[in-house]
Length: 363
Image 1 (cartoon, rainbow, N blue to C red):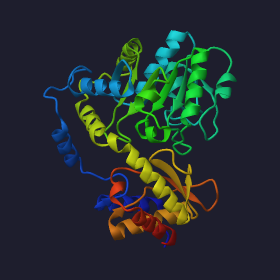
Image 2 (tube, rainbow, N blue to C red; image 1 turned 135 degrees about the vertical axis):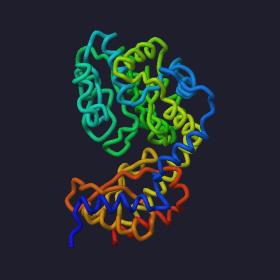
Image 3 (cartoon, rainbow, N blue to C red; image 1 turned 180 degrees about the vertical axis):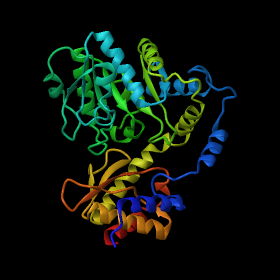
Image 4 (cartoon, rainbow, N blue to C red; image 1 turned 135 degrees about the horizontal axis):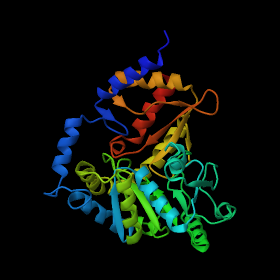
């Protein structure tokens, strides 16, 4: 008898909570997560409306890592980027902002830049790659800012080469327009680009980084850049309701991620390349090939529903979680998902990962 989508979701949730081994992200009960945060806290006093405590400490730490004079912690990257792009627009006297057509700013934020700030979006390109200087040059008139999402998540966590990034940044500088880096996964991008966080950030006027993705935090983001820019962004943070009484748990989790996960980025990237190569030998396809970061897309030559049933069946049988839900691919009969290599993945031999994914194709 066919399994309904609702039944399969319920089974997946129950099986996930009963797992005792995870390939990517482990499920941790809320009380346990809070106990770990309490143990990680180092500051006696907590922040108050963005001042003092772990908030001030993490702002200083990230500003130093990115080589920027100032930084501000905000509850979300959406707020951080709305704030800085609004500042750029007000300064330039222009509402026009150049972005990639598949960027998070356009695809996942309910048209916030236009609805909230009346910004006018100019698409550099919508192709599944990073934009080129000639595409920037093709946009006439005055721009308030240009953004680059590093990596570009939706088409497969895609990065430019270092030389391509340098040339694009130079094109922005020659035009006299600020370059802003959407660096939600910038931490994970350094191995492929072959340069430090500070060297990458030096190519842009401002940069945003996230804490709940590669660093495993609860939530939160930092926006870094010149002191006057960050001071203005703080005013927009207040206007948008992000100047909370305290953000203690988010700041503690962020600092813990900087201490424990950031040093592993090179190892995670190397493991991603190894796993991607092994999966292709098993009958899968990966995008990009090889991966640019510790995350990449995996394509299977089976329907999404069949892959989902096989994955849930295996999870129930083994109490191991090796993947999330599968989605239909553009090619009929194929499906895909995102695979994120995390510190948990390092505990799995590559051969064991390959064997587990092979079972899904045969299950």
